Image (cartoon, rainbow, N blue to C red):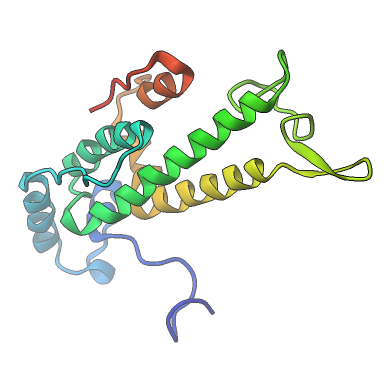
Length: 188
């Protein structure tokens, strides 16, 4: 059992997310008409502003990319500002550690943005003394950031609504192009 007494497993999904995903059931989630009214109110409320303490360009780009997407689906409100900001900071940490790992790799070595990825090699291990090696702490930080990104994306509703919210074949490469060095994110 984790969390609260008498409760185990995943935290409950937002009612708005059930409506967006098409999984809303009145016997579990309450009155459908009231849920629709709440969703409509969330979609017409002002888009929350980016917190001033987000300083990383990557975090700001991710905020702009996600906030309108979530808001337009009724999944973003003032109560989720800190959660989205934490997600954006985790993305920035994941990107920064990926860059550091790539910078440490010798010329021509695979990095996190190339495939296939070799889990062991100059960028992934560091000397541990007496000829042995240990996992690079930056790789560990990257792994932790990636896990945080996945968990926060799930909590925000980014994991299953993203595919439904885009047209067939449409791709959002704004963060990817920013990370790869174009200098500007093209997102919202």
